[in-house]
Every structure is written in C-alpha cells, then in structure tokens.
Length: 109
Image (tube, rainbow, N blue to C red; front, side):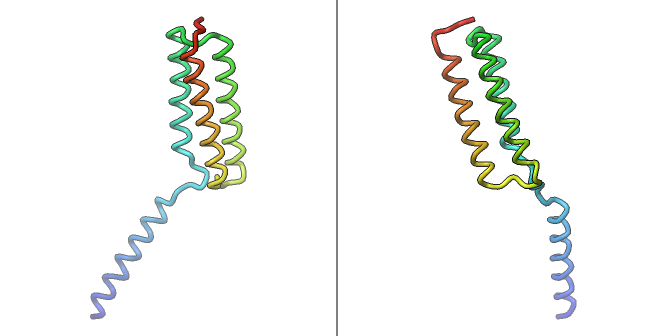
C-alpha cells in the first residue's frame, strides 16, 4: 500500500512541476496578436488591390495603432484582465467592420 501511495504522490508532483513550467504568462495575448496581424494583412491586401484609398488606409492604420497602444497599456501592470481583453476584442471587432466597410465602398484609389 505504501508503494502505491508513493507512486501516486510522485506522479502528482511530476504533473504539478510540469504545469508550473508551462504556466501561462498573464500578459500574453496571442489571440489578439494574431488578429492584429490578420487585420494588417487585410489592409495591405486592400491597398494592393486598389480597394482602399490612401486616406482610408491612413485612417485604418491609425485605428490599429490605437489598439496596439491600448494593448501595451493593458500589459503595463503585468496582467491583462478579462475586462481589458474584452475591451481589446471590442476594439478589434469595430476595426474589422471598418476594414470591411472601407474595402467594399464605392471609392477606389
């Protein structure tokens, strides 16, 4: 019985140690970062295809810069809270709608 308990305790300790090594960085925002990159690609594609005018592009780039600034501010205290993540997601949703709208309006560069 003691041998079985020792094996269980060692297995539990190994699992705990492995989890501690792979703990999540509280400032990590991989989903937000990937989405930013995709939105930048969409803007670049719109420029390349002529769907976005220079003024529209500048406006969309400025909006992306504001989102990046908000993300940096959220990370500055060492933790990105659920409320901050939700705010960044809302900002990205609005930016995505703006990109779509500007790419599909009647203006062309």
